[in-house]
Length: 178
Image (tube, rainbow, N blue to C red):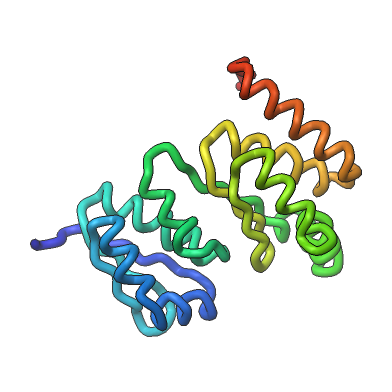
């Protein structure tokens, strides 16, 4: 099969190393129907049809942001999406970023687990980003909670806002935002 398209995806070196050490590349190739190559220990080259490259790029990017390959491969399903919040863009202060990440994760991971459980969204707190994988409406629920914590709100307020958004989604109410 001849490939005309090609994309390079840059991910953190430690994640790139992990990608190359395991059967992860084979898994992505099979899931996304494309070919992946590690380029000079710096990037992942993806070759395939335009759509397959698009899907593989999302999977590789999510893997690079700390998601396990099983979770990242959910992005091959058109019902799942990836979203991320860059804490460095918001704060720029390493000490504040650490504090916010700790609030999002919570004691022994309880906050992160609760947000994942209620929203049915998977969350990765890696580097200076908070990543989300899930269905659009579920990601919105998780983002409401995380953004409340980022803005300095209490855990109680974050949970309350998320649960309200969740009930709205379960009832099928659509919140039209422009």
